[in-house]
Image (tube, rainbow, N blue to C red; front, side, top):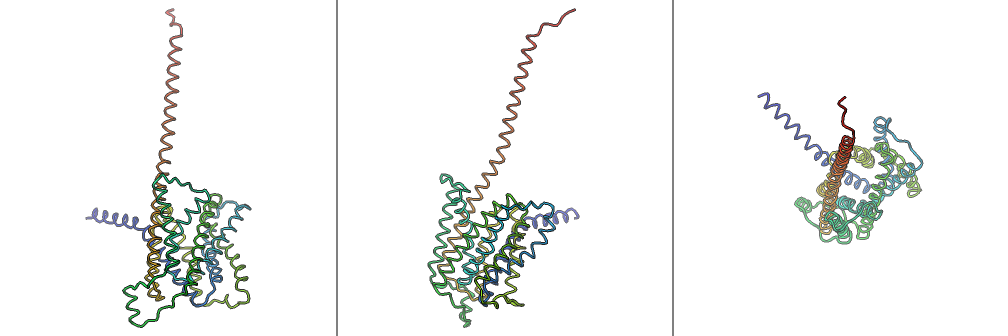
Amino acid sequence: MAEEANNEGRRCCSFFKTCKPYLAMVFVQFGYAGLSLISKISLNHGMSHYVLVVYRHAFATISIAPFAIFLERKDKPKLTFAICIKIFALALIGPVIDQNLYYAGLQFTSPTFASAMCNVMPAVTFLMAVLCRMEKVDLKKVIYQAKVVGTVVTVAGAMVMTLYKGPIVDLLWTKHLRAGNVVAAAPAADKEWIKGSIFLILSTFAWASFFILQTATIHVYSAQLSLTTLICFVGTLQGIGVTLVMERGKAGSWAIGLDMNLLAAAYAGIVNSSITYYLQGLVIEKKGPVFASAFSPLTMIIVAIMGSFVLAEDIYLGGTLGAVLIVGGLYSVLWGKQREMNEKEKEAMVLPLVLRSSTSQDTSETDQVEINTSTLQTKAAPPPSNN
């Protein structure tokens, strides 16, 4: 009985360990979904997205800095002028340009639309990596064909979502809401919708540029928590400068109290820039980036369901078709990326074996030469004397 109980306990622990990465990524997607909804409510209540970006990264700096100080105080590389320039550029591209474009696009569109557009990012990153000659493309191989086709399909889905709205798609609970005479939020004007779509697409390009530059920076400054803290801190200072210019004469825009604006800034800074960052980093370390990216469409589904309840958000046919194309293209790119990573791992495993076999072959040839030499010397030596 005791052995059976121990075996059952071990099976439960093993099952929990197997499920931990999945549960962590589901939690991360709920975190991202909450960000979209809370930020949309805050923006609808009149909060400036420039001010929201400043407060968000101020909260992020405060929440990440203690971990960076205590966990990386011994292994922190030296800050050189070149690294400082890269940190300045990362802060400008990520916290300032990308986040302001994203919040502006969210303000003019909807949380579901913005979440769907975020799935374009892997394809855009692949496209920019090819243009920057950081990644080679061999169209004779299936893996690169999948990545190219996935990129084209993803871009097509983004264009469908941007240029075609179509009729409203009724869900079971949205029909009930309309039957109950609940007034839905007025849809954005077509011009504002297209403007918001352009902002979100530009935000995706900025975020992909951030990832590419961040990858290059991590090679020379490996302390990731310290790097994130510095990026958020410098981004906060840059955001203050941008806000002072864009919101000049509007001192009231900086006002924040115990309301939805404070919740949006604190949630974005603490939950999204700290907790989800940490969890996603752990999952990527154990399962790889493709595993983590495969969960991103879940955010769109969560936002669509919660948005229809919380914001009475309408879901359009064009957005649905475009989202299907984007998700299909995303998984095509991720499949190609996963196959490429598997091939590189096989090559990395084969190379030491080849080197080892060649080394052993050279050693055996050397031993053979030594044996032959000693044999010749034995034959050439005079016979031993009988005296």
